[in-house]
Length: 593
Image 1 (cartoon, rainbow, N blue to C red):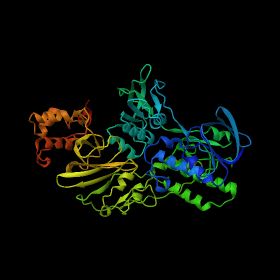
Image 2: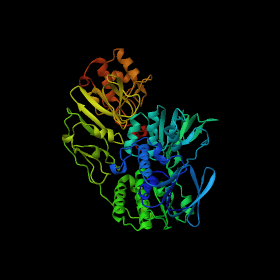
Image 3: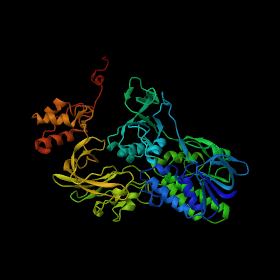
Image 4: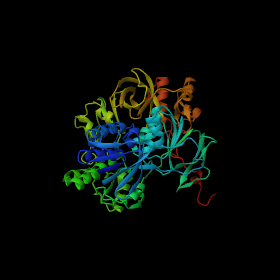
């Protein structure tokens, strides 16, 4: 059978293309899964971007929305169909129900996506070693836990999102390893994870998995210029290792179609050469999504629409130039931020010029009136998202034309409605009201069970450390499942607490450097110790490498609560040099050994 347009791959790019092609030309979608959606169906987090491209919607919700649009059009969908090759005379062969089927096309869109990269390490073939996509499939589609204690290798958005989803599921994520010296994914994703107490170790990698018949642990070590630093190896007890070190485009069908491919590492490896309208070197073949460059699902949907509109022009002669131009401009703006610099470089190697679009600096306003409930926006990285601006009905938040801009916030216009909190995909907005002694915080919360009024919980800081006890005052449920838990806490900790959790049986670490727990501190205070310096000497709290920068205020808060003495009346100890850890050799005179 001859089709005007055949789409191979029913993920975000293929589905978006079908919404354009479906009522214009005779269209067939072929996908190997039993439902359309691709990676979207396993994504439970909210997407970044703008409202036109489904910002603040969760991945599986976007898949459902696109499917409903496609079902309104005369599009033929062939599911559970595995394409085995592209043959001469524009022929696609695929297997369905055990039989080979063949169709011909006038125009072909390849949206085959990518596969996960592998990371070689000793015993990587043990049961219990997974790719991130496999874990999301098991957990989010089929409700199966692959394990109970996870080690994640790779801190790109996929690894960070998976860590958060695993924590939502109630399993333990020991740590995330990143071989580079900085986190690869969005800062807001990393912050969400760190608030849960999940450490991200940069400059570290996995050396080997431990176990005979299954994973029982792992050896990790520091990395320097891609080399393992000898003597830094240590063991961690885990039963599941997740490798999330990137994706590689699936180019086989593109090559078989006659499209030329080239190695462009910035785009993910070998990719089909194409123009800005997604046409490959074969004029009848187009590409979109991760096959063309490893990026966000949002850019995949944009590329799918652009390719589809150009295919419609080719097939029908209809003039869609204005719409194509608008979408190309939206895509250029989406890619104009710092996080897309690598993509821009890769596209330039392909001969596609991405126009430079300057990012305006956010407007600064005077400090807000803390006695009034207002939003606190902790989104300081230039990423493509304007969900908060769209959600705010009172013009208090501005992002501007370039959605990569950092939000500007005018506290005078904020009414405390908290719509921005529930819309933010990065959970980077909080509500705050602070008075002399007590403060109220509104914290975005995506965990079960939901707290109840008057429940006592632990307040945790940006690194997941215990700060103080908090009391739940109100819980606001939201249809998109980003609920807000309002808690009461001492005013001095209002800028420190960023997450809450129910107390666990194990006492939390207050001083992580010296591994001093809340129980240990409280026991010493119960013995009659009310002086900070004495507490410090007896427990070694604040005597670690950070010199108390992370925990001194927390310790003083515990001391104040237990003794009834205001923090302002307590001695905070003596600041002694050196203020940061240094090697003893620094004190030697020149020439001394």
